[in-house]
Image 1 (cartoon, rainbow, N blue to C red):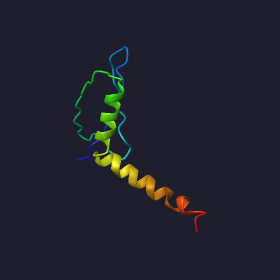
Image 2: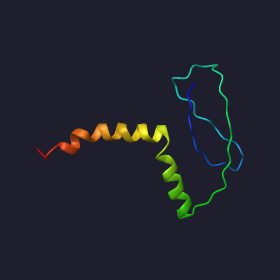
Image 3: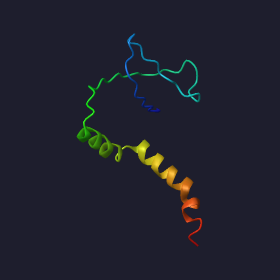
Length: 79
């Protein structure tokens, strides 16, 4: 089972398109759950969301991958 998270804004025509990655075969069964969050652009909410991201596996995997990508660059010139 794959979990793919996409955050989109609801358009004027109330239609949302889902982008399915190419590695998922045609005619595969997909379950779609629509969660609507009211928009609160407050600073406290943004900080709270960043704190939540620190516990999300996808975010942490991305952080590790970026760290590995730049490891050689970070060490360059320090030796």
